[in-house]
Image (cartoon, rainbow, N blue to C red; front, side):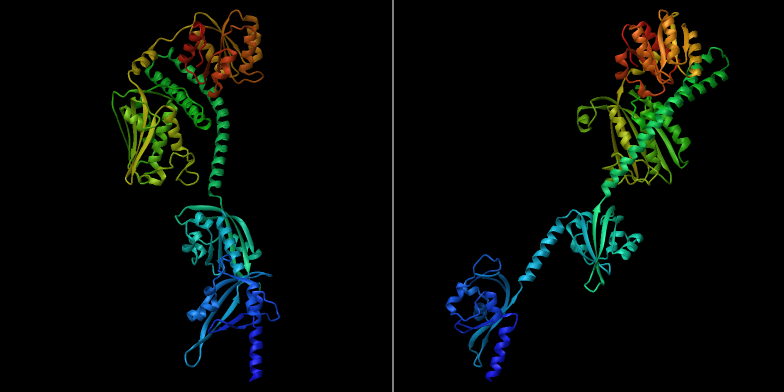
Amino acid sequence: MAKEREFLAAVVDNVSDGIVSCDANGVIALFNGATREFHGLPAEPIAADEWAEHFDLYLPDGKTLMRKEQIPLFRALEEGFVKDAEMVIAPREGTPRRILASGRAFFNEQGEKIGAVVAMHDVTERKRAERTMREQAEMLNLAQDAIVIRGYDRVITYWNKGAERLYGWTAQEAIGQPVDILYDGRGENEAAKQTLEASDEFQGEVHQIAKDGRSLTVNVRKNVMRNSDGTPRSVLSIATDLTEHKKLESQFLRAQRLESIGTLASGVAHDLNNVLAPIVMSAPLLRDDVDSALKNKIIDTIEKSAERGAQIVKQVLTFARGVEGERVMLDPRHLIKEMAQIVEETFPKGIEVTTRYAEDLDLVEGNPTQLHQVLLNLAVNARDAMPAGGKLVLAAENFEVDEHYAAMTPGTKPGPHVLINVSDTGTGIPPHVIEKMYDPFFTTKEIGKGSGLGLSTVLGIVKSHGGAVNAHSTPTGTSFRVLLPATPGASQLTNAENAAELPRGRGETILVVDDEVAIREVAQVLLAKSGYHVLLADDGPSALALYAQQHEQIALVLSDFLMPIMNGLALARIIRKMNPDAKIIMSSGREEDCGAADLAPIGIAACLTKPYTQATLLRTFDRVLHWDSLTLL
């Protein structure tokens, strides 16, 4: 019996968990080796009343000292049972230990309580590891990147706050789901899977989807996590959202392409305008020798076609380079008629176009090419909204903007306006698209079928004209209302000005400088018929030689802007040095060359954009020759 007790005492004293017991009065009866170690007690026996000098007992916060009745052993004695009671034992000399204590009271055969026993398990390292894991989890949740862990069964086991922000699913929703929810059922990129299987890691761009169906582009880094025996356990993925970056990159590339197109368009415009210039100037000259109605009709066709070609060139420049076009008084009825004709000739036959406008429509001051583009963009959008056909209505009416309407419509001012309405019976525009449809590069069309510049261009042009655009859409159709400031009563003035007789020369000598033979020849005939004496030069040096010889007779110089050897500006500067009072008119096939800020300091009296009409040329000559002040056109 004694040996058994000795054996049991040795076992209890050598187990790794602490064991402590007391009698019914709370007097300690057993304190095994592990318990002594936890409390920092010396190996040699010491009196119980000296134990408290060697350690302190704290509540789980590690700061609040335990009262006697809170100590697990005495709780077990008093309450009969205690389980996983957490406490901190802090030896005066040694490292504090975090302990979980469980125990119970025990009774004799008569049911009398005779004591209590508690086993204490050291969880210091486990708690430290848990704290480290919590801290790491908090750090992972602070990360902006989406961090996802999925098992080799493809089920998600970890989902941080970054993943919640990026994908839209909460951790509760995502954990337990297959990772394929990020791939819209299409599965992961095959190349990414093969790379991951071959090298345990992958990095690259992949396309994923969010909870709300948004398409995402992410840069993802994946690593295989393995067990100690080398078998694969899970895959860690860290994804950085590139969606907005890709959008900005796409916009930048588009802007670069537009800039390149603009540079190309500028050069093409110069060449085309030089081709069109002699045609536009020649057509009126032919009328003088023609008395046949049929031939006059042919001349009208030539003239209108050449002018239309010039407008197309201006349109390319306007939208490729942002060149601000000339503004004139326009009749909205003509704009609507032209647009209706284009729709009827080019749109699918299933689209029925109707025009409605008042006969007493006021005129608007604007650039015809730009306003034509506004209507064209709106009509094209209407066409695309009616793939199976439908009705397109182009309407216009006079509209008075009062103070209240102006306050509710930014960009407008009280006064008379013309309201142009482009409506369709198409599929309508969803509310979330309406919010963004005026943003540059925003488009709902497939790649290659839209630049995303249509409505942003419409808004920019209308605003630059002092107007406003608003849209109303339902699932059965959309209506765009374009409001433009009007000029009542301007038609009589415009018509009178157009009907006025063209001014004639008074025998003045004009020096025409242009490297294009056709332009020189037509200008010579036109000016000679209009009462001028003409000298011709095909480049800058030839013009300087003529001017040096006959500067007293030369009343005005008409020079091209871009010429080989010496450009028009260089020629103008030299002529003005020779004669500070020289009157010079520049002409160019590029509208941006006629910038007043560049020309005024060197005394250029006017600048004409090719192709110019006979009327424009003769009226400009008359102004420059006979008005005292300089006029920049």
